Length: 290
Image (cartoon, rainbow, N blue to C red):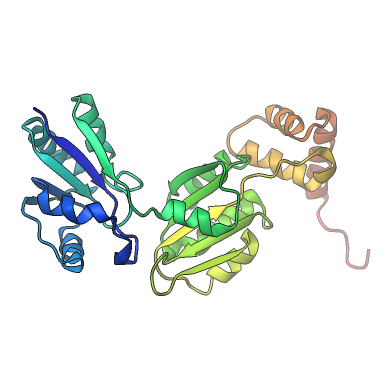
């Protein structure tokens, strides 16, 4: 008989949040695959337990090479427990490759549900949670980051991102540029830890706040694009939406048609707004005192 792959959620901060089954699985698994074996030792000490199975590292750098080894063990009947540093495996953490390989071999995959920074941040954000998208980490390069944000500029579901603290201000600046400075968001920091903080506000306001420096594990929750009607979209907003689409690679004609359809306006009205903005840019500011 083949074995079982168990994905186990681990605390994202407070050790008391460890799911009750986690200790039992750690003690009885034949193999424990851990993102960081040192963090695993800290976890087992905090839980007051010892692993009896073989402990191996399983992180981004060796995930591809180690997956076949673990699959072979599973095919031989082993119970393999996969844990990451915090939260659920596979969610912006190692795990997907192993799960896919196990499924392909018809090996049973189950889970020990545990804490999730994504769901915790959503619940605390104060933003709509009935429909949401998890976007993970944005690209580090500024141009690629803007491109990724432009892809979801008109997404109406709430958006959730992970971000490193030293890149938070640049990310919020980019979000304010693409989504608009008034789009509501929440920056959730150090969730379930001693210095937990949730900062809510418009993206422009949050970008300014982040320039002072922010520490800790960061999850950003952003309100989806508003379901606005024609009367709520002024010329500047129409032009901004067209430009976002153009910068994402759409031709101007297609971008104007798409924005007009979203806003419920004639294409001519959007076209006129774009032309007026272009003429204004060309003319530049008038003389002082004009």
